[in-house]
Image 1 (tube, helix red, strand yellow):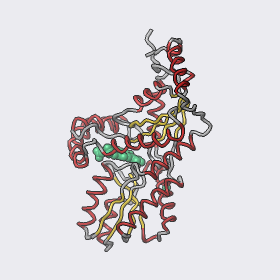
Image 2 (tube, protein in one colour):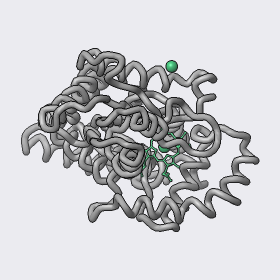
Image 3 (cartoon, protein in one colour):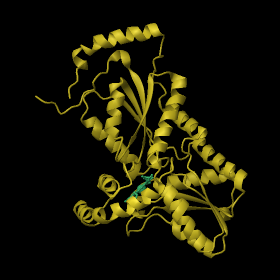
Image 4 (tube, protein in one colour):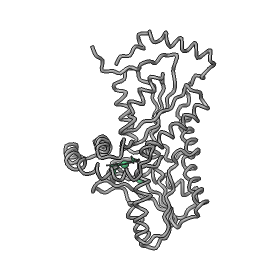
Length: 371
Ligand SMILES: C=CC1=C(C)c2cc3[nH]c(cc4nc(cc5[nH]c(cc1n2)c(C)c5CCC(=O)O)C(CCC(=O)O)=C4C)c(C)c3C=C
Ligand SMILES: [Fe+2]
Ligand SMILES: [Fe+2]
């Protein structure tokens, strides 16, 4: 009888490894309407992302949004696309490569690192399968969302749980909920702002812009808004900024409902109209540069500010795969894997013994694939 549970091609007790899976939101495979349609369909069908009655939403999504938005979004994606693909894809890949280097230098190669996207590719299921096939029995998932939100963090957990529901032998799981006030993360942001000031001087106003969510998510208990404000508070305390020298805003509004306020675009227009001549914008909720920072903040909002009378507009890039960011992520991982034994890589001789046992173990019934 075919089984509904997935087995790993091979994972034997001898080969227990620790796996670290970093994830981000996801991005289309290409800046084309068809790739965008696929991506937006998966993303916007997630009930964690859009919380309006299912039937009504599915009608709006399929009859209106998926007919109009893919072509429009494809154009904006094309404006930030690189020869390495979508910025979010290549930054996340690069973060995983550097984090792997850093963690394996410390723990050896019985700790493995991979990355996945909540929507699109590489999927969470494909990454968990790759990790389990390598012998991972203890899995740490680190979503690269510093601030917790049901629409992002919890949705990532849902995808892991959905994958686990079809897996026979579950790895032990740990999941990082948030790191919005982690001292290393705050320091990394503060140092990045200071480095920018060192090169360009200060502006009149520091704008800390976070991705928005519908306002009713906050009223229903989502801690996202508070976590953003906490991140801001810790940054401005470290920089010793006064109330007139910074502002927290929310960007990337979608649809007609009210989202968290103040809106980034309206604020920048207002600031310029009221005489602020220079601003520096940082997006402390984005671990990597992506469409929402490169196109919306760096291009679109610059235009709004300059057209309304602003004179100097600077975007301070996301932490991406800077050494300090990788060190921060590595410290977060090390905190969360405490108590998990990672077997040393061992000598060539030990490797040979393990290899021989692996061959033997492949004949062991509980290691047979049960696809
Ligand atoms: C429709 C509702 C949306 C909610 C709620 C939402 C929350 C949310 N998103 C991010 C991070 C990212 N969002 C990105 C793109 C993006 N977001 C939405 C919609 C919602 N986001 C859409 C429709 C899109 C796609 C772009 C477009 O068509 O306009 C991205 C960038 C992805 C990329 O490919 O570069 C990120 C990152 C967070 C952190 C968040 C809630 C806290
Ligand atoms: Fe978004
Ligand atoms: Fe709040």
